[in-house]
Image (tube, rainbow, N blue to C red; front, side):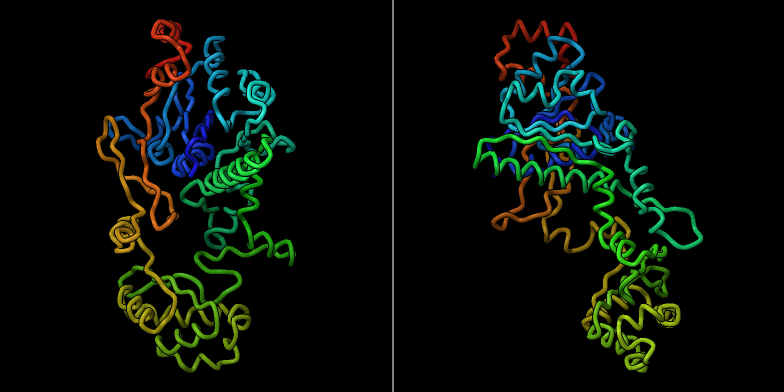
Length: 394
């Protein structure tokens, strides 16, 4: 759907690369511009035959060129790339892009209708604009770590970089909106996405509970502040089941399936509001019953009873679940050194089909010479650029 759109990607680590991977999945041409040392995630463990699993997760459908933007010749290469690009995305510290000759003002001189997206840690308006903002820091400062886990226990980090991913998707959505507008008006746009703003936005109803009530939501483990029961319960085999009784119909079905019919009309638990108010009385009753059977027995029983539920999976169980094979969310690409590499594919079906990757995550500088030729550089000029270090192949 984005065929003919060129994305010039100066970003690294996660938020920018996932935004450009999404755009690449949707058909855009993405050129990943890396410094001589490469995207720093190329060195993040674990490495498999020298390639980072982290890097491999967010960089497919891109070509890589290494440009030393601290050289005049390297900046000239970047200038030619900007001329032929529709979108630039970068996540340098404030002022760095300008110092390297690829800031918004310079890019707009070269390409007046450019769509220029900057991803910033705290944003240009923030008193913290110059501070680094890794996802751990965002999880801490957004309140997430003090809303996750259990009361009396240390703060808990969500296992993956949740807010980087949210910010990346916001960036991709903003770019798509700008492309639609440019097709209508011919106008470019300057977009700035703040990781911290994205984190606060991502707190959603947890933040709204505080804003509307003035109460800090308690840390509730797997439970929910607004719905009861809506949490994981330990079963007889030590594994867990997640149960979501989000309305009175499901609550009644759950009680019958658990052999607790007497709770249906118990005034302490009759409505969800009652159950939220009296969760400390209800949850121990349910916990005791769930210990009487193994997880998979409960899953089968509750599903037959029409109660929303699911097993709490380990990752190996996720990829052995029949859904994973049926949905086609797993695919593969042929990597030049690793062979076939499994990928988590774009999570939407378009006309009944899932977008398939056309390019594997690139080796550092893999396409440098190829891209230079497309920019009109001769073989002699390319050799000179490579020897001078303005551009590198690997």
